[in-house]
Amino acid sequence: MKTVLLTLALAGAACAENTVFERAQAALAPGPDLRLSARGSVAETSLPAGPLVWKCTTLAGLDSPNPRVRVEVAGQDGKRSWVVAFDKQVQVIQKLALHPLTAGTPLSETDFHATSVWLPATQVGSSIYLGPYDGRYRLRRSVPAQSALAAAWVEAVPYCEAGCRVEIRVQQPGLALTLSGKALERGYPDRPVRVRLESGGTMQAWYDKDGQLSDRRLP
Image (cartoon, rainbow, N blue to C red; front, side):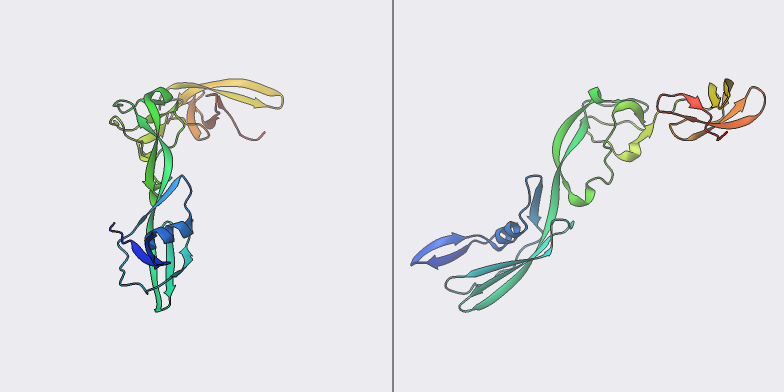
């Protein structure tokens, strides 16, 4: 963005004053993990002669994806006003693939490295996969080196595939047994799985976090 330095005569000497953009940005005071860039340019004509009085009013603050500030410059010859709009970027930690990964690869911390990147505020948390990278999830597609994962590229690793043999733990007051059968669909944590029992019947069971299939029906 082209910036214009405002030059004022103070005490008979010329000195450089902050630009409208810099004054507006100072009013918003972004932290170290946030940065602002002016959207478009600030149209300026000649400023009033003599000492100036600045006033900044926040129209949309840093909690907005598009912060805006009204900057007013008052002098002895009159007053001018600007509304300065910003594009907000947020500094976040992303994990990038160290090398190309193929579809079906379980996610592992050793395949990724963390790096600090700047993202437009509108993209933060929207499509980037944030973890976990502990083998419980795998890739739906191949991933190039130095790429951050999109959430749509990742799926949970099933505990069983359709057709695999499974055992269901049944534990109720006065009853504890194990039933054998065949899964009719993929089994994921905390989702019901339909199982065809060896007896010929069908029932639902659930995997817990340890991979144990159990009956959660109330006694």
